[in-house]
Length: 101
Image (cartoon, rainbow, N blue to C red):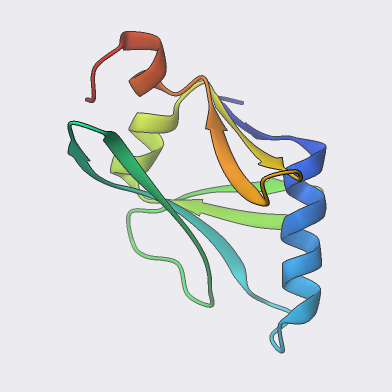
């Protein structure tokens, strides 16, 4: 698999999903924009996939990446940093190549 989610991220996503009213929600990761500070990463629950989504399942969590986001996140991982209370992308092409794609 070319994208992964750490155990910390899985735990946080499940906790957020359990707070939601909809048991069938999908977790979307989307890369948006590219500027001098790099990419912006958006994380949200959704109920419907888009036609060009790449779909993964991790420990019962269905994750959606649109095709552009998937290309940016190949060989990357999603982690959750508890002390700072945020998600973080590790080893993205943006970091590995030193320049946004």
